[in-house]
Length: 118
Image 1 (cartoon, helix red, strand yellow):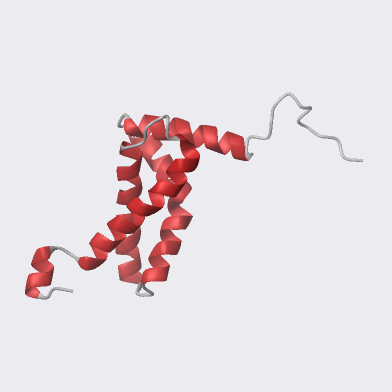
Image 2 (tube, helix red, strand yellow):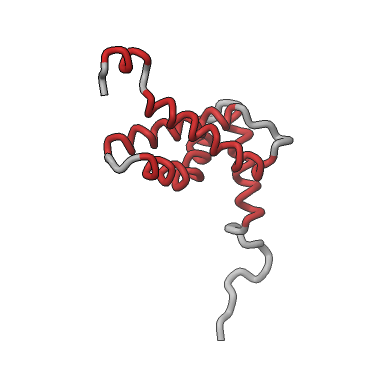
């Protein structure tokens, strides 16, 4: 017979509702400039960022550049977060910010395009 150590006094902290609450707290703090909260938000979206980067290229150096750009995109999205948006809508909106940042990084600066630096 299994005996639960958690006797029902505390809910499962890994549930979807708890994750949403934590994400919302981190987003609100990141929007105010809290660096550690921004890192928590980036950590939550790191698998998505890596997946999107690996779909764009297999070159490890380029993947690392795209991951950094995606991280910057998450930071931009977190700065623009509003409480009325909610964490569910943020999860949808952040994809656009990540992809825009990756597109910009893949394209390169206008100087690199002008002088052919790759």
